[in-house]
Image (cartoon, rainbow over all chains, first blue to last red; front, side, top):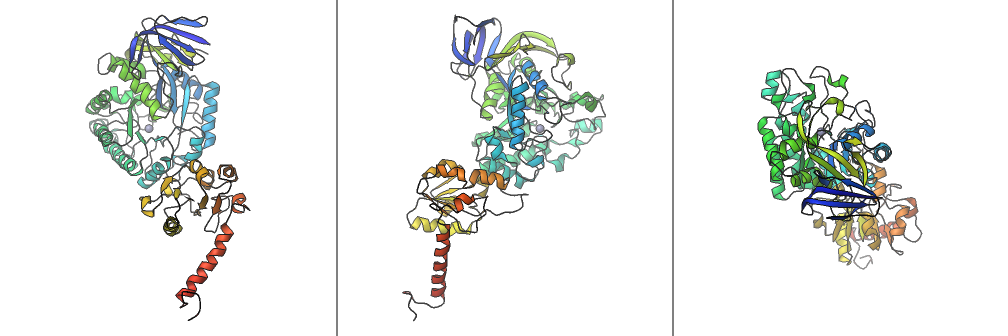
Length: 430
Length: 156
Ligand SMILES: [Zn+2]
């Protein structure tokens, strides 16, 4: 099967490409990038006015299957991903049962192959049942294709246990990805400790509850040599620690979410909007500014959604009773384009690094480049499309977005995975 | 010579590695990172790895150490099953070994953990019972000397 994508502005910093050209795909791989390409037979798509980039990867997504299919499942979650412009997502293991053995890894892979609309990269738990007490069978999971290990949602509380996790994982070529949360400090924290918690009269979730674990895990990275990827970093000081660890030459990377970049604790008004209840919580405007600086200067490696779907009945409750998390797959690209690229904070090339190149590298996935030989995982963006975020447009089962009503510019229109269209003109290809 | 297993808690290693070095052996230590001591070079080994299969074809002798069957809370590896898969000398690993490579073990063996019975009782490869017999003779000699025996073995 041949596919000729014509006249798009093709951008890929890995090969120093940023020009209007054609891309020819055959049998799932790019065979030629150049001008005035032609082919005998196959499908030709005119992408004039569009931007073509290596397929986007969201390395932090909760697909909720198995166990919480009322919130999301692999079919709906990967459709939401394709709709948002992603060609691959990394699924978190905090399902029921937890993905803490090879059987779980194989289940997610098999479901993704059957019903998925994008590639699903599987992460496994660090400890059995996410309980922080017994090492999970990381070796067996790795042999069955798990690409990273994380106790996301909980964090490993005991420093000695975390040391064992990282030491054991260091024998594989993969990262350990901590969700940094010291339960003894965070307790029942609901929102950022400070102005917000005081104003709303709710338990605070202090920045230190995150920063102490970042500091601890960087120290353990130094001790064990295990590559460390800090999940959803939210504070200026936490980011500074990562910056210093990188300067020291430690194998430390980190990610941020659009909601921690573009929303702050000030957005949680006295309507107690549960859509803005996330973990870690929205921080101060100063923190958000520091994160954006990190995105621009290279300290932040990846932008991820931490797509965390919940049912309406779970979120439509008193703030303290509502679960943490918001969805993000279908808004992330447009939020980044609108708030960072259009404003000149970063350029398209840096966006590609943050949302495609670095996530693949961190997950030890084969690189995708706009160059001959590469797998044809591609995202096509209409940079001028203006749209309003509406619940009804989501393909996710869930609607717990903090950006409903936002006016955004830029949208994925077409997505190709291995040369096959999963999204055409904004519509999923079934 | 490869030494496989709990290097960090092994008293065997502390004397075995220096002895092997005296005999001119090249010693490779093989274990999950959680069972390798902090400064393993202090022991005198020539190389360290956690990838058993990558070095097994080069080994003339494989010295398997006993794994402690401790409780799994806080254990240095997830399960005896995974240990056996990654660091056990299983029957499947036979094809990776040199034709004349031998197998040693200080005993007692945890069958099915660090050694499959196929390997423990392998008629050509296993020298474990020879080690036991040699151990008796060495102990006899040591006790004899400590109790006043003379160097040439003839009573004073
Ligand atoms: Zn998390």
